Amino acid sequence: MVETNSPAAPLKVEYDRASEVKAFDESKVGVKGLVDAGITQIPPFFYKSICDDNPVVNDAQFSIPIIDLGGLNGDPFGRKEIVDRVRAASENGGFFQIVNHSIPKSVMEEMKEGVRQFYEQDTEVKKALYTRDFTKPLVYNTNNNLYSSPSADWRVTFLVRMAPDPPNLEDLPLVCRDILVEYSKQVMKVGILVFELISEALGLNPNHLHDIDCTEGLVLLCHYYPPCPQPELTMGVTKHADIDFLTVLLQDDIGGLQVLNNNEWVDVSPHPGALVVNIGDLLQLITNDRFKSVEHRVLASHVGPRVSIAGFFCTGVLSTSKLYGPISELLSKNNPPKYRETTVKDYIAHSGKKGLDGTKPSDHFKLAKAE
Ligand code: OGA
Ligand code: NI
Image 1 (tube, rainbow, N blue to C red):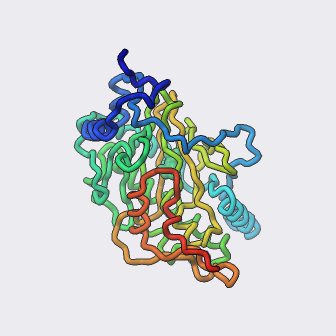
Image 2: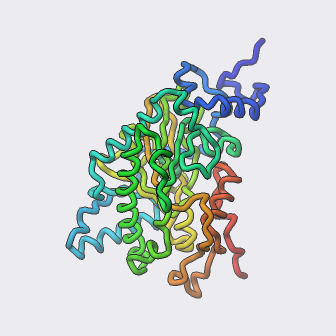
């Protein structure tokens, strides 16, 4: 009898994973190429690992708060209430959505459309951009951690570093060049505002996080999740926490993003006009665990393509000498530092080496508990 890659018996398959992964990478067609070729069974290296198996709740007691920033205009009580809600969300679920945030609907629509057009252009144009060199201004590939993660994700991603040094225009894809520049400007403005609210929520001067350069870097990760023929076997994005200070995410209306709350997966449902905000590992580290970087994932789906744009506030792999550790104003005798200092680059390098394996890179930077 011939062994097949049937999902019913994935473990019986004699399978040279490393060379399959390499061949797929070298084909440079990405997951979209597999879908375009009409595959009906996904390659086993996309099979999810069991660490994603927490129950999903539909009637959650807990839901992701939607915070209306419209109340910031003028009314000081409005601002206080917003800061209180930001604090509660950042201390508990690590996620919230914001509406009335100043990015026009037309810019959000154009951004999603631009990303879709990038992926739907000619394969040869995209192949020329396919790379795993993360120092390039534009990095396009299927999974940025394809070789280090136990299972590959059902998505294609390109990332562009928009700050601190804006890329040369000719390094950006023609089909979405202008909107990438415009959206980045707008999302930077929103990011600066959210960092202000978070600073206030921590009892710090509103400019504190901006002043220590949490807004210095902005990397846009532009994701495309093609429809998947066997969505139950894989993930759009494997469970992870973000390795930045803060993420501001624009998602379309397909859904699939879920966040882990008390060991249950809760939907971050698309909300018209909203941006999703979540605390990243580096913010958890500098707040000495007060604000939480919470694990999340994206389900694969028969429906798609799904498009999302994650704005990562951090300088990524750039060389910077600045050290980040728990903010001294937040520490006390009863709240000693839990982490040692690190540069953003070292933090990201460590998480890259580790891959998406379901554990947090910040554990590596934890200080031993005092006796
Ligand atoms: C990410 C991420 C979620 C999404 O890029 O880190 O979690 O909805 N993305 O694409
Ligand atoms: Ni994420």
